[in-house]
Image (cartoon, rainbow, N blue to C red; front, top):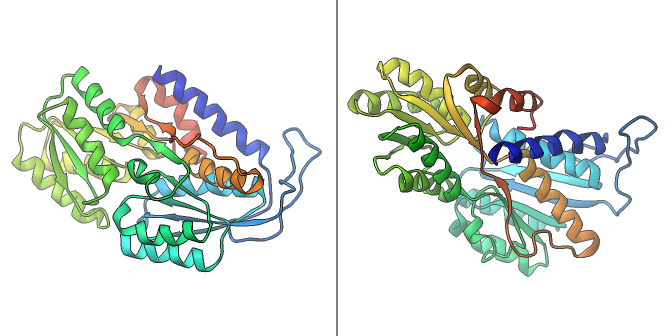
Length: 331
């Protein structure tokens, strides 16, 4: 079932870009009509609109490059000027929302990692009549904060999927690494793992300093001799954890959430057990396209319910096929 899900999504991810050819960038510019060749098309003839994508991305996290790439492809197809900004601090992300409201954008796509910090800013947006969708984080708070739909993976279910997979492989004492304390999605992931593997221990690290991440994990492994698995909640964290495992002389194995091309290759090589992918390209693409659909016809994708883009388990059996899409930047 999991293999069918990711194969289907990967096919969509490969086909949609061919149908969305355009010279339009996320910083504005005139849309370019295309055509004549196989797979050619034309930018939407609807009036040009402006959409803000506001995330909690931290500098250097390749996950957000994939989200942004999906959003940019949708913007190119839909004749949208895409304004992308990000800040991992909830208060500053709220300021970015308020700036978008002041710019009188036609829609806001926003991540809700720290929903309490964003509620006042999002009320200003909805009071101004600006449609909102959420993506990636904050599914439980999405509707309450005024979004008409949410694109993402159910984080608790994703955590449970990891826990079930580890249990099936007879791992009993994993360490789940949270790189941003207070992030509702990351906390839900580790809670989901612990619900299936009771011996799971939580380790908080500072995800903005990878040197510190490495040393913290190394010290934890040296002090926890019975740890048999390390779970990174993002590809950069998991790849860093591999070095810590070596430095600590630990026999623990690594598993992950999310992916990039390097992590997919490690799964192919057998260095990493598996990852649970939430398909970030689809999150970026879907959120921008949904706001365009709302502006063109009042359509509300999802019918008031979240649109799930995951979780899908990628293990050694499926990673080779997924790797080629990761190398293209769509996984």
